[in-house]
Length: 264
Image (cartoon, rainbow, N blue to C red; front, top):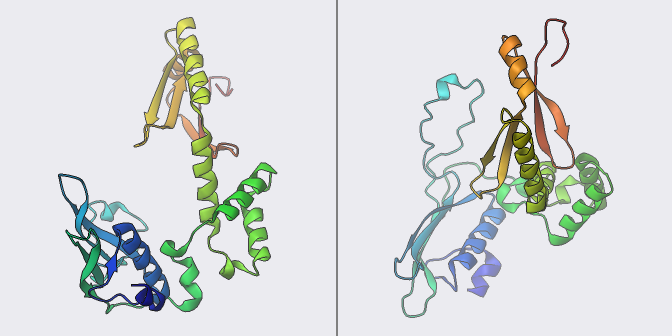
């Protein structure tokens, strides 16, 4: 298998010690050839959860499902799937516990990425541990993402030599801040809300959680806001131009005006 790995050419009969190893091989092969990759399916045994067989495909495999909202979309996403048949199927060897390539098609029906754009492929972009440390250090020093990314590009001789984009840079910082939102901070906020309710039952708040049970959105309104809206709620402006750089979260303010043209 190692000889084939050096040539990065999948072959029927190749064996991998795990599905993770096979997936990494498929990513590397896609990066060498210039196509994005995707996991098609994995069939697992109910007894132990081990994968019995799986298939990795080209990201252009199949067709995108029809979106019922398309007629309402002003700028729909471009169709990228071409029903490409490129795939690598693996089956588990019950005796060895390894995975063997049993189904393989390598002929694409679409254009592949040019060598000079391979670093822009989603599957090939990555931030190393050292790069992550440098991104965090720049952020702690108050250097903005754009300036920090431009500096990183200069250090490696140009953006084409950097393994991640500005968007990846910003996503890395966003994920870091999500992890850093400790329970103590969220707990203090909830205690504050409970105290406000004790002072005035008209105070209201709502939390929206994400799939990982982390706080995603927060909404609150006090008694005065409710009263003002009851009197002057004909027109309300919702402004999201405010933002907090520290937590990288949008802050939306509902703005209204009273009879004296004063902001409520």
